[in-house]
Structure formats: structure tokens, C-alpha cells
Image (tube, rainbow, N blue to C red; front, side, top):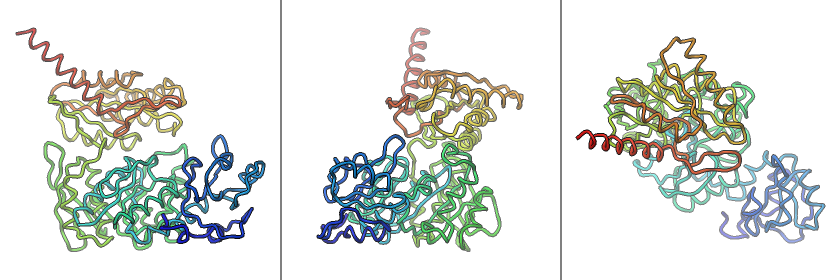
Length: 516
């Protein structure tokens, strides 16, 4: 935020940046020190950005806001002019199209004074940013992080709602981080953020790409559209493209993205030739922790990560490549990633049981497959999984979720996962259909059951497990709420797994005592 009203840009200057015309202009200069999309949170002297909503236009709330002025479109102007409000109004064709640049201008373009590293892709964004945060801090940098599990400034939690915050919130966060001495910011950059302009006005030192698989096809009509949204982050003609692109080329989408970017730093974990950085696993411990070897040019580095799975070798390699491109000391960086853990990502729950219990955020077909492949490689026993699908989201992935589970697990429970406004029974039915069709096609001896209650499903999964087995609850990970209709009910998979394991141990003790 600006230090004082007079150091903040004038409304006239903001209008020039936005290409806006001003209605109700004042004779004296009006300085704008902040901006918000929320009329209830606009600061006195701030600018209210009134955009069309799904139910009502934001300009309907302009009259009651304490803003010094409103930025809106023609429809918003018509609504405000029906009131007695005579404060200045900046009118543009599309508010979101200018919101990023306007927000950056109001907060003094803080990203230009920070080293911002952004990560996009379908899976692995959160884990990669956590690895970056730990590694950067180990290398001596004061670091901020913005993503799915929240925002931190030098390790301190800051509440946010979206994976990538709206442009006004994002630029205000950058300004706060800069004021607190942050030098490096790592953040997840979602396809929604790229499509809706949330990161417009941000200068990225490094843009990283993990992978692409089916997700968000409720928002993007096709996979090509989904890819094109991500490509904005790497296309040198784009205003939000990173100065340096670091791209994992382990899938065909990564190979295509490398063709979009200009002089990309490429990362491969499949033994590809001619990549900028190659990575391979050299050892796996019983816990799933891994030793990896990274080769950048002629330099070879060895690292240890506590995170299991091939995909985390790729995440660690991508994070290291991004740090390298940002000029960070790689040896110091790697010493910090060893202890990195991510809430709800392959998170083991250990209550003394004799089988592996894991909670993971996997909520797309490719992620479910990756998690199950990792567990299958770690245990000699059977594999059980809970899957579900969210309501009001891409419905085409529902049968695929069931199919991917059946391809790999011995016991598949299909349950509810944030049904939102949809009938949960219909969502479950789509997942069940995909699971049973795949079981028939594969001719696998796999048990598929449907249990509506997520808590009951967890109880059943834990009760099924025997010594040497592995069970995983997918879908919610770090989330602590179940969205049913427009209500959010407290529900934490990790808490429920611990409860179920505790009740199992208590029952086992009781049985033992009775036998004695």
C-alpha cells in the first residue's frame, strides 16, 4: 500500500492506465491508495472495482461502500446512476481486463522489486512451491508463499481464499511482503488466474510448468483451451510470461509447452537427452523418502527428500531448476528441501497400526493414478482407496476417477466429496459406473463399494486393512470442510483417519483383554 495519500496515484492517472472515462470528476486531485473487489472491505480513500457477478452486479453495492471512487463497466454505471451517488466513476468495457494493471499501479508495482517464482500445471503446484519455500529459506532468502494451502510471509500464516488471489488482493500481498523484507515470492498460478487476469500486472522472474492432465473442464471447454490458458505463462508475446521458463518435459504437454516458450530451461526425469536438467532416483527408503541425483549442465548434485513417489522426484527437480534460474545457490537450496512436507499431500497417518494409512489431495484422474502407483511400489500387501468427485465441477472426469482407482487398487470405496448443489447420489453413480466398467474390462478381482457417508467410508477402509496393506483417502487432503449445498460442514480426512485408527486399536485391545 502507498505510504501516504499523496504518494498514491491520482484517479486521473489510474483512469489513463485503465483507458477509462471518468464520470463525476472532481476539481481537486483524488489519490487512490488501495483497491478491492469487496465493497464491504474497501478502505476509505480506496477504489471499489465493481464487476458482474453470477447473481448480481457488484455495482449494486457501490452506494454503501466507503470507496473514494468506483471502477466499473457500462452496466455498473447504469446501476450507480440510478442512485444519488455522485462520487467519481471510472468506466471501462471490461473491468477484469484492466484490474491487474490498475492494482499493480495503485500498490507501486511491488513485484518488480521482488523475485517472483510462479508454478502452474495440473498436479504438483503446491508441492513444488513448498519445496521452493524451504529451499529458498535455506539459501538465506526471506520468502513469501501464496497457494492452495494458504499464504505465508516469512513463515507467518496470512489468511487467503483462492489458490491465486484476485489481482487487488495479490498486489496488496506483494506490497505487504515487500514492506516486511521479503525478497522472494513463490506462488501457484492456476489456469483460472491466467484466464481471468488475476496475475496481470505481476512481473515473474521464473515461470515453472509441472504437467497437464484432465481437470477444470467445467471452466475450460477442451484440453486445448486448458493448455492455451497455461501457455499464457510461457508465451513470450504474453504480458504475464516469466522472464525465464522452466518446464518439466516428462509428458507430451510439457514438450509442447517447451515449444511455446523462448529458450526454456527443460527438466526431465525419464532419461531424456538434451534437457537442461535431468533427475533420477538413487535410493528409496521404507518410509518412501528418496535420494535423488540432479544434473544441471556439468554439475551433479545429490539430494534427499522425505516425499515419496516418482512425481515428487519431478517436483523436486522442477523446484531446483527454478531456483537455479533465479540465481540461487543450488547446494544451499537442496539442503533445505529435505524436511519439506506438504499438508494433505501423501500425508501418512500413524497411530501405531501395522499397515500404511495415507491422506492425499488427489482429486483428478491422473493424480489418483500417481498416488496409487506410488503406494503399490511401497507395499507388498493389498491396496485400498477412497475416491469421490466434487459437485458443480467437471463431470466428465467422474467415471475416470473410478476407472483409475480400479486399475490399481484391490478395494475401492466411492463416497461423497463436496457435492455442493448437486445430488450426491448421482455424482457417486457416475464414479461407480466408471469403476465397475473398468473392473469388467480389466477382469480384475477388485471389490467396489459405495458408501455415502465419508466418515463411514473411512471406517470401512480402516476396518478392511490388514498387516502389510496400504490404504489412501483421496480428494480433500488439507481441506477441513465438506461442502453440501451452500453449507460448509467441518470435516478433516486426517482427523477422521486418526479417529478410525484409534477406535480400531481400542477394539483390538478389548479383544485381546477378553481372550486373556
